[in-house]
Length: 345
Figure 1 (cartoon, rainbow, N blue to C red):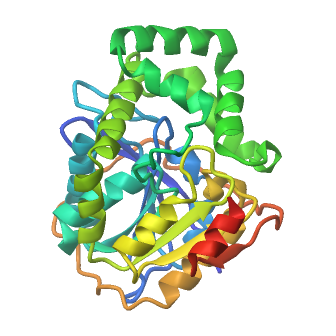
Figure 2 (cartoon, helix red, strand yellow):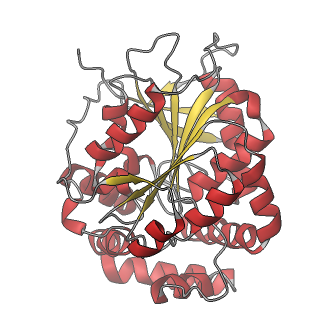
């Protein structure tokens, strides 16, 4: 298959939104994929997975407001606002029903978008979907400290700024990977360098810490309204694949039990030996699971874009990064019974 060059550009959606585009072969039976990162993430989170998915699909990865190369620019970074941003991106840029591939906070935003605009969503791939915790489920201490910072945004922003200056870009990215992966050594050097460069350049703007806290606080409030959130999950009508790392420190694997009850038709996969970001830890295995699932779905037909092209190229000559596979540690498993999940905890 011939290589396709990655394109990097911005679009105006009440402010600049950065997008990386991986043109794939396309076709009437292959809907485009839109990748949505998690809290504190960016398009870099899809650096290794997107080229693999682009072997069969046209792939977009956008930076949400206050993340990556998208400044907040006076906009809200809360989940509801970023869900509206994604909705506009689907309508004005993609222009046809797409499969949303969301990780963590991005998975929650994908759910909200699928409920609000089902006609724009051909399917969902939810990686590490946050679900309300049970009363007896313990929170990771590092995660608990982050939650505490959200209580007083001004203090939290100063604390995050001090942490960034103390650790430096490389130290901050290392600490992030230690929290989100089961094995930091699996992170590709190329993906790590891109993530470090985004932090070092302050690409998201001077108020990135405030944007992080605003997004984190809104995610916490969404999960706290457990009944309403579960009702939103239950209301999704699009075909859905869920990937959950068995060693995820941020999202307990027990959330699959809730999803099995709320959406018995969803395809649930528990990935052994993997943390919160399988698209970073095991991109080749993740791509196989996603592409196999997409190939077996009767997704909505494509339609022609209705809006004019408003893209502003950033790096038109940027070469496509080479895809990197991860060691074959951990295998995906179709989640079927409660005892199988409990055995993996």
